[in-house]
Image (tube, rainbow, N blue to C red):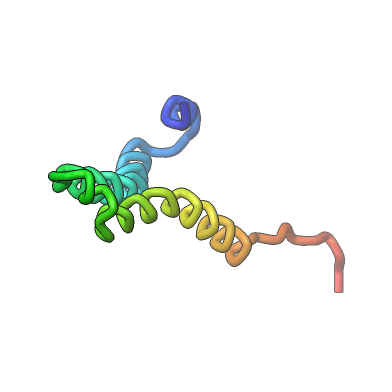
Length: 87
């Protein structure tokens, strides 16, 4: 849905492309790591392996972390509109 709506903006295609790729890269790495750990399971005990559990923890915390980082970024670089007061 976001990609469709971004087509209605004046953002250049090249900017949209590289920003999208950079934004998706971290999520892709997290999902690939989780899948890699799942592929290594050879018994029921493998489900409780520290690496697999860590992969699922990272997978679960990733969206929360990104949301918090975006909130910090927005607050840090908040642009205040200029006032019309004369000094």
